[in-house]
Amino acid sequence: MNKLIIYVVFLSLLSLNISCSKSWLEEKRDIKLIVPTTLNDMELLLNGDVFQSDGRGATETSCDDYEFTSDQYNSLYNAFDRDLVIWKTEEFPRFGFLEWDEWDMAYSQIQVSNVVLTGLSKIVRTNNNKELYDKVKGTALYHRSKQFLNLALTFCKYYNINTAKNELGIPLKLTDDIDENVDRGTLENTYRQIISDLKESAVLLPAVTTINTQIAKGGAYGLLARAYLYMDDYKQASLCSDSSFKYHPFIENFNNVDISSDYPFYDISHEIHTYSMQVKYSPNSITGRIDQSLINTYDVNDLRKQTFFKLQTDGKYTFKGSFTGQLFSGTSTGEILLIGAECNVRLGDVNTAITKLKLLLQNRYKIGSEIPMPLKDKSDILEYILSERRKELVTRGLRWQDLKRLNNDPHFAKTLIRKIGDSTYMLAPNDPRYVMRIPQYVINYNHITQNTY
Image (cartoon, rainbow, N blue to C red; front, side):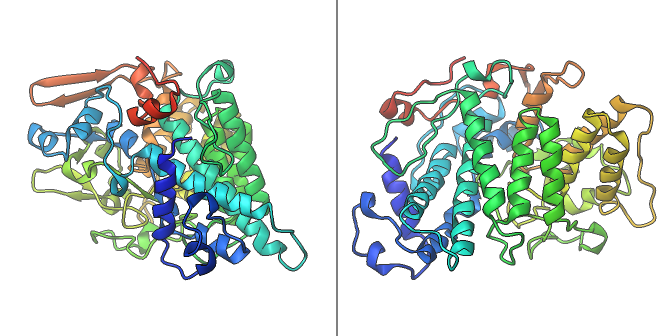
């Protein structure tokens, strides 16, 4: 695997503001020898700041939730940002350690997770240490699978059960051996590993946690539900969303939130499963504006409009309402209810779908107001749920993958159109540009297959 990971992981270890294991952090300067030796070391290592960050910023920039004037477009930080906005096919540039791209961000966490899993293999699980042992192992598996999924969402085609065994996946780095060469493998194997890791993680993790940077069963099942949804496995996604809600049923009632504040969730919402902020190249949710057609979908009594968005002097809206103070990328109760509702209606259980949808929306609409609810047929309800999904999960880094999956259904397929000044840019459904190009420095070093157009 790319030896750049050596330095990324070393920086990750140095950035951990912890006092653990001076014996191995100070004495073993060779990164190959930096292996934690106690469960406490491993737990503290997995609590590092690096695990609070996520990629998928590039796909967020490219999705259809934003619009730009010429001045706003030109004010974006660099040419790569502007390329993402107009869907120009360019490789990820190398910015340096302080501005990791989606590839480095993911594999730095995967490598640390593998270091922990290697360390665990040398510790005997006993009655005295089993709770901490299982928590550490479950956490490492969660973080590894989370990053495998992020990579697949960014650098791979959409999963199709009929073609996944022939499509390129991502390099599945499963050991801490930095000299191990790993090719991309198949998309089928990529998702098989993601599901396997998350299933084991959900079993091992504790039922609850009181620390918002740690993960528990509700979060593992939540990420598993997200993965299954993006495999179009609605039955398993439904079951996992129910399990997630069982362990983490809290829903933020927006009637109790200061919706006028620029930071309505400044203290971090309890609705999230774990703290996870999105690493973005450019603040397009502030520099640009939220697409007006999306703004127009919010009902007058829908508190999300005032909670999520801020009206600017030009009459357009920017985003302000992240659950973590920065753009949130993790799973939450709202996403879980929407996954469950969508899967229920796709499986024919319309009544359960409506029940879950109402449970969410009664916490998003003004108290006493009527919640619009289509009750005509399955198709109308599904369309309504998908609309609510877009409104609820705006800026979560999920819209791009939702576009990829919905483009496979002619009823929901969408041609993206971006008008900037006198120029118009278009992205057709299933365009190859929905798959991001792997950073060229990775291709040059590892000689893995690049995504081509």
